[in-house]
Amino acid sequence: MKALSRHRHHPMAYIVILLLALVATGGLFVAFQPRAAQAEGATQQDIDAGRDLFIANCATCHGLEGQGRVDNEGNAMGPSLVGVGAAAVDFQVGSGRMPMQESGPQARRKPAQFTQEQTDQMAAYVASLGPGPAIPTDEAVDPALGDAAVGGEIFRINCAMCHNAAGAGGALTHGKFAPPVVGVDPRHVYEAMETGPQNMPVFNDSNISAEEKRDVIAYLDQLETNGSPGGFALGSLGPVTEGLYAWTIGLALLLGCAVWLGAKAK
Picture 1: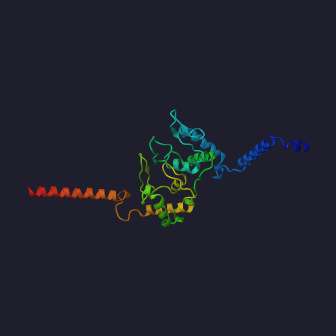
Picture 2 (picture 1 turned 90 degrees about the vertical axis):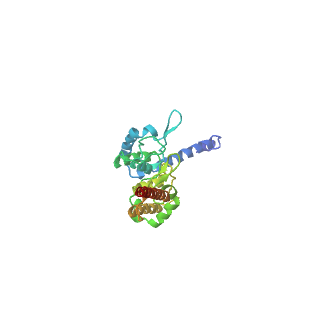
């Protein structure tokens, strides 16, 4: 103790104490921080299987460790997946958007290329790279538990400007688009709001709560169930489509009448 007391005023003593405190803090953080994949119930076997699938199908663009890649000219080939969470993988891979079929301004929805088990394994691996949004539970996306009236109001305020009030989707800039959201798996709707894929902003729980997300899902489910009570939906794209149909049919009838009257006059 006396030896320590003699050196406590040494100029290096404070630096040593600071370094020890930093090491202790870092060690405690690593020891007590829950791994994202473990929190979702994934096993190490799932993570290892997911890594094998990831390396075989995704690493070309996203890097062997999901850190992202750039080409020789510095252009991004694929973004980093560290911290995107299992929900982003379940949405992108489960909806068939990833792997991309071809390069373009936006990944398009297509039939999924992997089974749900394989998708879950890749999601577990990506979740192990860093904490992020988890795959929602069945209860969180059950439209029967949501309020469609509240969900409709939330959807019209936050989503209708891109996806259309009827959820039919719409065009954006530079060849991009907001896809239709009617007839989409409720889990994917929730994950899209949570992760913000493509050009969509992120609506985390601080913006739209988990209960409100379920209300939006209930509203979209009601749109799908009710269909178009006014008759032909005409794409649900509003007065532009309706006007086009009216002019096309109206002009065709007028031309037909003119030709008929001309033929009768002869």
